[in-house]
Image (cartoon, rainbow, N blue to C red):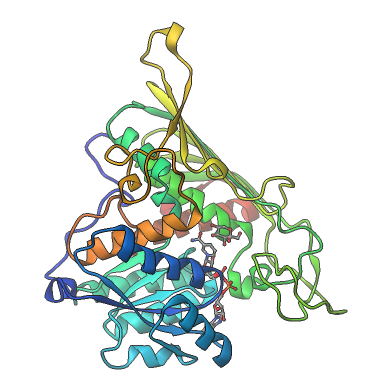
Length: 419
Ligand code: NAI
Ligand code: SOE
């Protein structure tokens, strides 16, 4: 996208910010949600202080959960000063500067908007919301709060894999030239028939299934890497393979509720297991997108390939430290896929904060890097890679909505129809 930067690449200039007032002072974080993302974000906030030299340190102030005993244990284990079962209590007074929303999708709007109204910055999990209406309300609340210097962030953490941030840089440097194809898929297989009816299968809570959960990531990644926006979505297919599931008997962990108590009760999944669609981009590229929970044998296969006139890149999260790169400007006898190990500090984004070359990083480092980027941004310093705010994540939510309309109405949907 010569000359014109999309929302995923840039940040609007802000008025004099609340962060400036507090520059140099610690950022006091309050988190809501103490399970999978509660643990990942806690690792992130703790690790950012240690791996990065931050202009503002991070204080893990308050953790809010639902069960008093579990919340107290979580707070102690992960280094939060206080645990509470009343998330609203952290909005009163001056206990926290930023609220981290790590709860199921239907709670993002209520919690984020309340935090912004209470004068807190917000870092909210993806997808921005369960519905387009909730997402729009969040975008509008963020716009209003920005006038008071408040900032919003969305945890599209895969942007912070060094390989993905490098792909973004290569495109920006013009090394791929004009982009022809985007081929993205996010394949998981934990949605098999034995997996109980967790919140991720309840449309009232999750909004959608694999679509909002996984397509949201690859839509964001495509926008981030290419710098192009979606113009049209077509040919979408939405499918639920396993509608009848066991109602969980309680307990259990991991994404699939593994180890939980058995129950004899059954219920219906009200979400998709997979959504596939085609796309046209603002710079003329075309794309294919596929997300599923039933791609047996693919556990967390978040992949993107971009083909340009001068070269191509290929990324697969299951080999997250590597970026595959084809340089089509080389003489043909030298052309081939190069495997770039994205771990060289100084050359590769984020790598310098961690280990020596090829001493690999893992899933949690994406969250550490994201927390560091948030701390940089709150000190008015440029993050290593742009962080999506609510307005940016709303653009991703519009694409999700366009794909669902395309699937249900069996027609191409232009993004300008989705406001
Ligand atoms: P989870 O089920 O493991 O944890 C949800 C947490 O929210 C639990 O601690 C639960 O007690 C808490 N919670 C639920 N209702 C609450 C309420 N009314 N008040 C206070 N706390 C409440 O879910 P998980 O996997 O952590 O997902 C949370 C969010 O993070 C979702 O939006 C999900 O899409 C997103 N996510 C993002 C990932 C990423 O890669 N960025 C990875 C996994 C999840
Ligand atoms: C489950 O599908 C899940 O944890 C998603 O919720 C995350 O967003 C994804 O990054 C990993 O898988």
